Image (cartoon, rainbow, N blue to C red; front, top):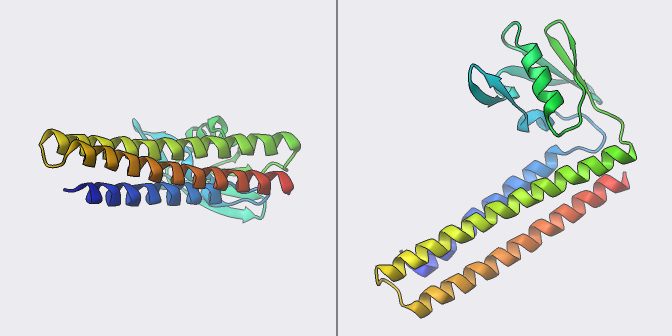
Length: 186
């Protein structure tokens, strides 16, 4: 493996982190219900934390209400609790085995809460990018230790990976700012 391979791998992983962050942002809807909003909520399923979509059917009842239909009887209470305890600010209500999750109207407070969710997701994406940078730098140091590259090559590789990291973090910041603007403008 060469420093060019390390940089190419780091670039690909950082691009995946940005794409993952973009899909995360799409799930944060401002006024309308979207089943993808519940994708990040996990529920305890016999000792394992699994996404709600793996233990229930998640669909839309109308433009402002999500329905969650558990596949196992008696599992509705656990799902309802998981939704309520998530950082989404949703208040589900049970009707037998059907859980209705109404989308709250966007008050000023709810908009501020959504911007906090966006900022947290942005920070998580930045952490993922920084982890990729750390891994790339460790690979370069290992090559240096194995005498496959010189110290100058290792330093150059670290500088290139840092420039790449800075560029990706600026892109994430721009995405966060645009989503915050979208939330506050509605």
